[in-house]
Image 1 (cartoon, one colour):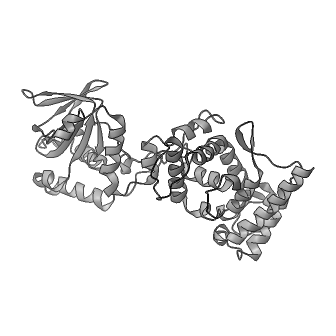
Image 2: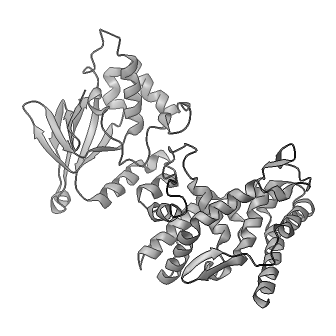
Image 3: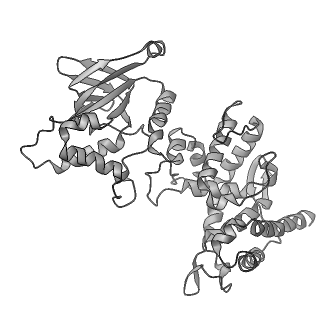
Length: 399
């Protein structure tokens, strides 16, 4: 198998290699190679630059069930290895520099990574490990196609990784994470908890990671009216169930805040200054938002409400459904205030959580038909609770 001789140098054994650099590539100081290599040559290559890792080794969960794609790759290796190189699309590799040793059929790669083909690499690795005790098995009998892109343009590497993976239904969280659009949000969150890490890939499944999609849903629910989208209804219903929309909206705001002219995923265009102000809210409120959500998920004020679907351990409230939680949290957007250039949720001195719990219980039974899903999706539930917090805000300002 290939092995690393240096942290930034990888020796990739190949069967053949051909340089196919085009005029556009030459103009932009990059080289393109294609060829075939023994399948064992790629198993030690990093997948760090890919938008997602091998799904059957997703971090934090037990081994996942193979998909039809995984099964097809494995079946070809086991049953028709002589056809593997033509039935499999191979792997795409990026490296910052390379040196070809034709005599020994080795190409030395600087800081390489597979950016398309992580699933193929993972299946090959599993296959070879299963064959390790087979004395008649030769790891050099089966080959795989590879494309090698040599460039030191980090932005282009990220772009290539995303573009080459679109056909595989990569989750938005992996794309946003790969573009580093969550890094500042994570840093802001860490001001409250220095050890916290946001989930930035669909394969980061450990409970040790902050659930980024949920965090963004909660923050969108807390956005005050003065920071809401121009010419759009102030309606928070979607924050409960549309986590992908919340993530894509955040991506739009990030892009508009960082670039004066930018195309958004939704096709909307937002004013640069508006986007900067809204993005600042996300950074300021990140840690507080999750603390608020976790508080209300097990708020003991729900004792005695007799609301169905709330999980209890004796009289202890263990978990309140999100359908009840989100209208409550959205109502707290009334209390968002900018002090000294930083946003926070500031409850009026006369505020008591019992008021909103009582109103939520009433909306749950009388509007939502005692169904948490209905409550989370019902605009009237949000409006009823927001009316109450708005009144408290006005009273608090007058006192």
